[in-house]
Image 1 (spheres, rainbow, N blue to C red):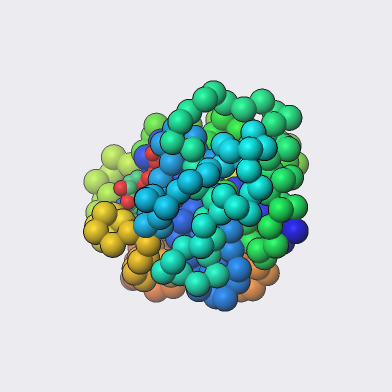
Image 2 (spheres, rainbow, N blue to C red; image 1 turned 90 degrees about the vertical axis):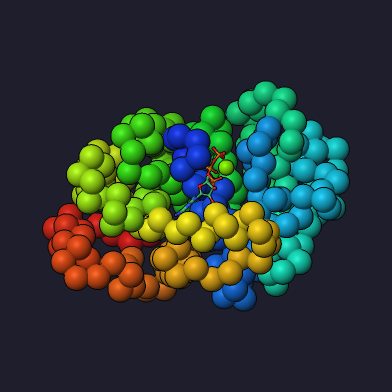
Amino acid sequence: MVGKTVLVTSGKGGVGCSTVAARLAVAFARRQIPTLLVDLSAGNPALDLLCGLDDRVVYDARDVLHARIDPRRAALPVVSVQNLTLLPGATIFDGVPGEAEVIRLFETLRGGFDQAVMILDVPKEIVGTLSEFADLTLAVSDLSAASLRATASLNRSPRAQMRLVLNRCSAERDATGVRPTVREALDYVGLPLAAILLDEPLVVADGATEPGRFRFRPAFDVPIKNLSIRITGGHAPLLSGLIRGRKRRKILADMAKRRLENA
Ligand SMILES: Nc1ncnc2c1ncn2[C@@H]1O[C@H](COP(=O)(O)OP(=O)(O)OP(=O)(O)O)[C@@H](O)[C@H]1O
Ligand SMILES: [Mg+2]
């Protein structure tokens, strides 16, 4: 049976949900923690491509959903990252599965693998159902109004442990004055903060040119690694000196004021 289960979702498309799911799974794996990454985003799966496994996919999460294949046979080891296994997503979208189906799939995966951690890239249509069963749900958003609004209205179970991952918070973007500050975003969304990730164009370039390699990009991967440490009960800072000077002090002061807990 799988140990901890973490859902990664987003209210709006294109904000980095799959990127966060993949790199969080890589962070666990690089800490020698056997990790299963599951792509439930039927229709436009991204994780097989990001992991450089797209030409190896035979079965996917939809085959497991419809009980056509043993989940262990559908999963593929990520060649370039030890301790990481991927259950790829379906390229065909055949409708949003019903609540009972979604729960059955989740229980099949949890019982069918023995990795210590399972990270699932979950579309918003089913996160409401699954969030009740997972140990943690991470809602990924950037600082755009459209994404923050969609995040605030995500469905979730009242018992869900849902936290916010703010992605693409580069200093330049904040300086335009058009986007809300981190603090305003937190006020608006009303979720505790799990991580702040900066804009990192090299993450995009790596995905295109070196799929599966997951070069360590500090602006993205240090806060993600720290999040993985907090998820397994350790202590690691939200910001590791990546944002310096006045800006960092302001974010930290804001967070102290709100007594934000760590994930
Ligand atoms: N912090 C970041 N800095 C720069 N680019 C990023 C960052 N996070 C994500 N991206 C890029 O944004 C694009 C969208 O990311 P991703 O596919 O992870 O989003 P998504 O929310 O899963 O989208 P979809 O709605 O298609 O599932 C990708 O090209 C990705 O490399
Ligand atoms: Mg995605």
